[in-house]
Length: 386
Image (tube, rainbow, N blue to C red; front, side, top):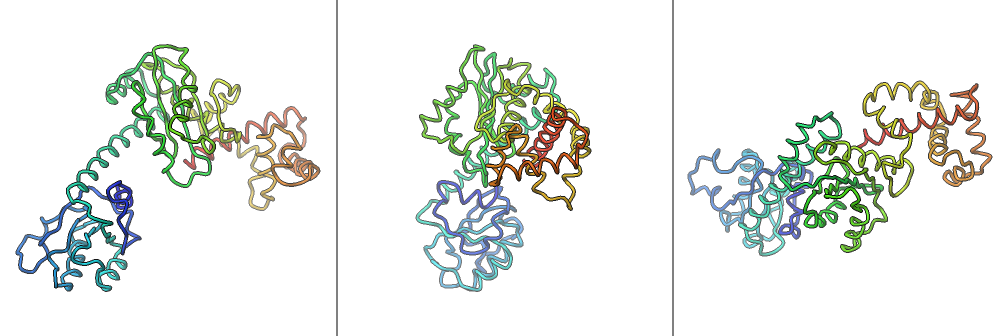
């Protein structure tokens, strides 16, 4: 949790950043109250006043009619490792300019309460959020292991025990990401579905979100139920991309289901489709497994075949056209529409591409090889961006 997250809590949503905006990335591990600790009349062991990485709440009563105390207080908070000062504007609505300037210079956030928020409620909400974030981090760590590592049956059993939720015999997984993503705020609406998941869970992985559902029947219509929930909560799917796994046995095949949903969503993005089911990927499954098992070998192949198109001196439109050629399955008219140009321009570019990378290959071999290379290239790019 950092200061920016702190400002996104329901109770702090009306707070204003009055100084030190460049310090909003500072971590927050605690919230504490400042009363009279920085009054010269109080003798205290300063090192024990506040713990590092705290947001310090205050009404600034210690500086009533003594504004000169404020600058020293901010300096002391910085020395003690505080992450921010949040003050209730009862004694001071606006702080002295020298205090604000100093906080800006030191990238020390100073926040002004929006109203009559209670200190104790702020502390409780912050700690509750931090606890939730710890569990979310735990689940994301689990997802990373399931996707990136080869997990044994015993480890799967241990993971399910650690999650400590009821799981049925069969597991179904969806991986979701927003198109043209800029932040993770879109995920919050999907977390509304969590109370409905009596035998499953929702968690994040990098910039995507997993919905894991288990059921006693292999015939369970997970996708239909999920979209029914989305409709019920008025959550638009227009800007979302979905990847769905096949049905798997929870106790032994959970990692397979998670990986299938994850890679299906990536393939949906590559093909600019809103939804992809892993069971419909056909031979693309081979490319996914090749990259997953030996990314270096896969990229060596990509670079050896597409290398001439990736050189800096080569027109970048050629590589872009090669990608669209594969995505549009060689349909020249659709490629031309995607690039806002005449079909003859595409034919000319494809001729140049073939001269560079495959002057002697027939049409069938050329399409087969460029399709594999481009898909591996895009798969690698998507995974590394995330």
